Length: 637
Image 1 (cartoon, rainbow, N blue to C red):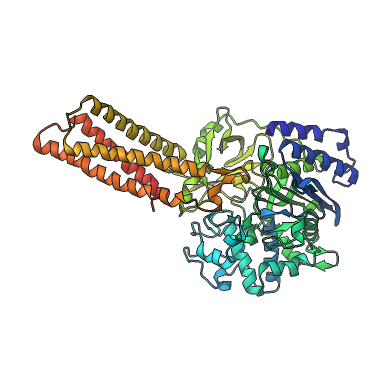
Image 2: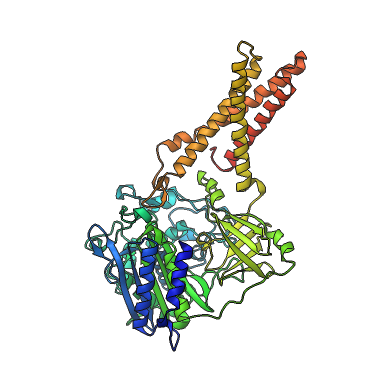
């Protein structure tokens, strides 16, 4: 599908209508034709029900238009002026704008310990305190916990303060030491706005941002209040489920992803940021504040794009671009600003299959209206293979769960870095492999695109991998990855699990067959007990793995996510008891295996035979290793 859609875009970009005498979308007829063709092709190719787009340039709204349907059941078309779509994480920019307003008023300081503004305490895990500057650049060092992030009913919602105090994540990195995208950090900043302003964040932004910008149809309230709810787009699944409507998804940390807005309202927000905080005759920010939000404030490696205060940065076709993308399962949105040309584009859709469509549209827009020089093909240096070996390994995202049972999912999200046969650096994430060529020591460029990655070493000697603002892998947006030791890799885990299952289940079956052949000839008690314990351990291990896979694999087709994301299934607690039973059985197996050896040495009798005793010893070692593995990934606790 990706290849087919790419070919379609190439065709669109090479039609005669592409010709222009000057850069930029000045020709409205051409712009509308381009958007009509490209977005319509996306809706068809990716089975997206509807979309909306807004384009601004030179202080004016050029176009706000809807495509497809907002709601199949109501036969309601998408409208660029009226239809509200969920903005996902794009709404974070509203929260950051609110923070900067209070900084201007002297009520907040970006470099003060956030505990100064809170009525609860962020633990002093590190000597450096967490500041608003850290929150705005996603460098506060919080782990990422998905528990209670989204729910499907208003009854499951909780007050923002309750969420922040009861689900306070562990601080795993010193502030400023690593970039790890954090919804919790944005929610914390939103709560600080509430504390300092004395108003709920939804009230504050309605009065201080939405009203002056005439964003009269935008809201952070969940559910969307009437009469706005009448214009809210419904979200849909993908493929065969593209006409199955999902429920309204509530974001508990709503400052990070609870916003709903029409494209035309987001256009006015873009205009304000492109005009140094001014819209019409009103200023929502001072020019210095806008510049601070737009300028690079942090980069994991100096040669990468980095991030401003809230706005992410990327370089496309030689132009510096500010952007933020967002997704709330069935809704996908992205906001892009091109300050050098005073141009902005906002795109949103309401289909699960539209995750890549927003970035694809922006790339096509830039190639059409702001084309860059042709990228020269890169040829790896003859000796590059020797240097690439130093970077090989498995890297895990810093945006991850470190203290909870969700830690194990790091194994599924890791990046496998290896040296390719032709001197390319190969990076594989979730089954997709991208190739890069070394352009400077530690800096690599994608073989086909203007995308970079860099390796750098942390203060503690950990090797890090970071991608620039337009990474080939979306999971790397505003987060870095660190190389893990061999025992934390997917390959070691797969080997241990496979060996454990094969050894225990195979041994159990072998013993059963032997017992049936030798009826009436029983082994000594310690041997029989050890074998029963080994068989029990293998059975518990198998049931645990099957249960874990079934829970994680229980995907709700409407949202494309495991149902566990929206709450723990009843069997989860029971499943997590099995590792404790496995630990007890492994300990007992180790003791009984020792008794078999002790009895053999004491009596001089070859109890179970030498190979039988070695077999039991091997089973004990593997069982203890599996229990250690469960403990390491927080599945035993």
